[in-house]
Image 1 (cartoon, rainbow, N blue to C red):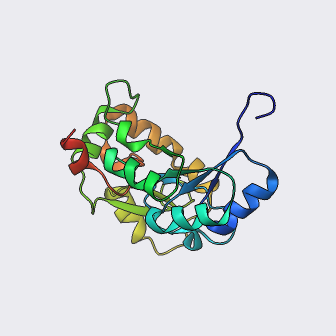
Image 2 (tube, one colour):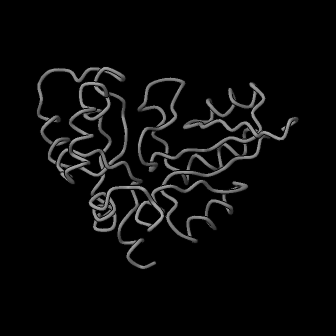
Amino acid sequence: MERGVAVIGTATTVREAVQWEASGVDLIVAQGSEAGGHRGTFVGAHEQGMIGSMALIPQMVDTVKTPVIAAGGIMDGRGVVASLALGAVGVQMGSAFLPCVESGAHGKYKEAVVNSTDESTVITRALSGKPARGIRNPFITDMERYAEPIPPYPVENALTRDIRVKAAKQGLMDLMSMWVVQILGNLLSRA
């Protein structure tokens, strides 16, 4: 922050947080497995970084001296309070704001988020080649039955780009990528 710019790293494990701290970052985001979209795992396999926020935040806070920001599955004030109680200095929220008027998300995407349940999301490589959490749709389900390996990112991302772009323009949720946290709609409907 020497020049007025904060450098923030995202960690999905304590080991990653230790590496970020050693590199001199100003803040570390503890990204729990509930997080939507592509996660920030950079040490080890994706599966090793699938630690839930409630377990990850206190372990990270207890291990590093760098301030920790909580992320992943925080949808309302209760999540904020819980994150602060676990030792985080703040929270990072994204999916909670997808349905807002100010959001640039497609209307069908917003509708899917609001109508989702705790069982609506899945971790998939089908749309980009990199594991990401999103709302299950027929494209993801069909790709799970595909017998051949899905190409890694960025190859799969490039292969599905035109499909995703055209689907978004036409409002075809069956083919869109709808990245969101694991905890969704029922919390939004109470807001």
